[in-house]
Image (cartoon, rainbow, N blue to C red; front, side, top):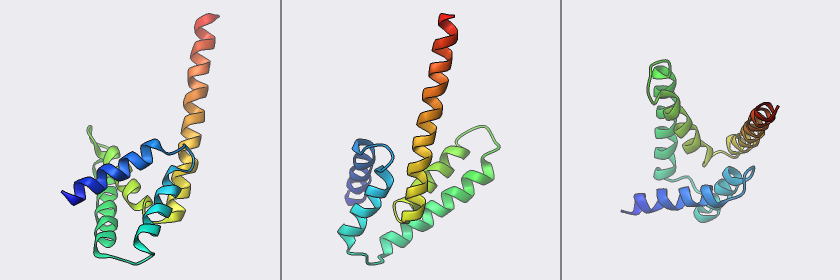
Length: 112
């Protein structure tokens, strides 16, 4: 039950944090809890994340959850490596800007 509790807590931390800093804040929080030590759980999580990325990219061209698996794997690795977390934070902001622009474009065209 401890692993499930950790997953739920990590999800809540990511969901409730501000966009553009949520992944980096999660990395900092996890490092503070561990004191920077490498643990078996950390290595296992990294290995599972890497496996999900490889499997997701391998079956990504098939209809189904391939791309989603790769994204989940990347998020699992992002909570361990600050550079990837910073990149995901920047990508999140970029995606939000693109979505906002597309919504604005369609609202503008609908009223014209």
